[in-house]
Image (cartoon, rainbow, N blue to C red; front, side, top):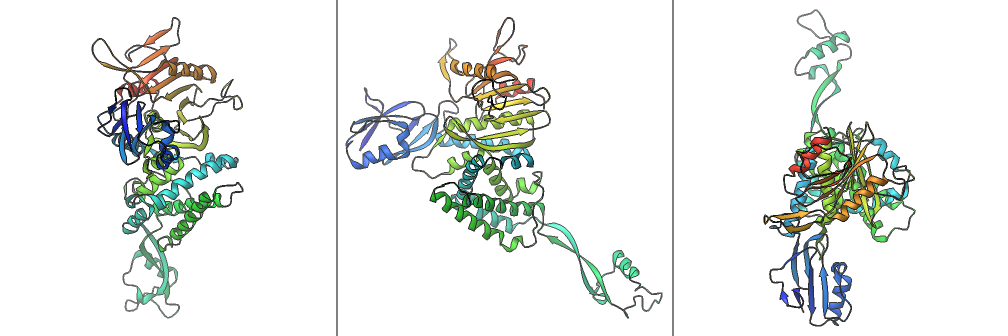
Length: 508
């Protein structure tokens, strides 16, 4: 049906079923007019990566910023990146970044600012976009995820090993049913005037022989079980928002909302929650929520539904015929979590999470903070909110010193310029165009002191704004954090330059 070449002139054929992202390949078609061929090249997910004119026997395939698995007609190819861990397959590279993100997330204890979420209800359009994102994600983990990752499996694990807490209650019973006398029972008898001086008849039962007896027991009404109940209530509310929306949403979305609502209510009616009350305060310091099977998984699902990480999980888990994942977006999110962890430490407050439109795509805008710094992902700076004096700008990551108001921007750029130097070393450098963009942020956004490219390379450079200006190539040099630059950040590596840079200029 087709042949795939690395070079159309030499007809060098791809024989190992392995492709590299951002590299051109050429598909030679045997029968370009066949309905099956036309349908596949124009309607499948692969079409966005093709340059093909209908009827031509040759199509150019160039996959930019995506890695993973791809299917061309009856053959499957692996698409990997040369920018990090090139010895791995594309699927293994995705797993590496996801694993890195999971490790960072597990080190962080999140708490949440309720006022931030209350404020979001003032703009229904923003909330509706966000609710649809949440609905699609939640529907997937309820109905489409693999068995070991679905909510049903997690809830079964919880019921098999529930979190219980010691509790006590009282019940009225006859005095002669008391099996052991405790100080509290003696105190109760004395208050009721039932104790006598008669050694043969210590208790007077001639009146009302009933007393309140304390009963100690293990209760299901633990913090962790209240959270699980809250999760299903949260799912219920997301579904209801979509169902009751006055906007013209697709039937598919509303069907998903109805399915999810029904399932959430089935769980809420489970006997497990019979004595479980409503969650009033969300605390994430519970070792059960962070480590016990079932609890940990549902808590993680809730977190992923709130923040940008949910898109990673959703894209990574979708069983699509063209199973490519956008590594550039995944890299952005990885950079955000890495910066947040190094600057904010292990205790982080989440003050904002909403959907915004950036470069034509729906993305999340999230803010993490502690007492000293705020780390924002896709924060909007515009002349209407006095953030920018000109056009609207959204750097990937913005770090604000809460005391001084000074801002440092980081922009994740999943691209490099590579060359071999005179010592025969492979140099992966930043692109000058990206440095120009850093000047835009620095010049247009109020209170900005520096703007830095994060990229999967191996060269550090900082252009200090000083008299005279200086080009810094090594962290051992003395310099101030005023200017623009580029710093390497590579998934799966130690990233000592980045951690040293952040440790030097940002206190913990």
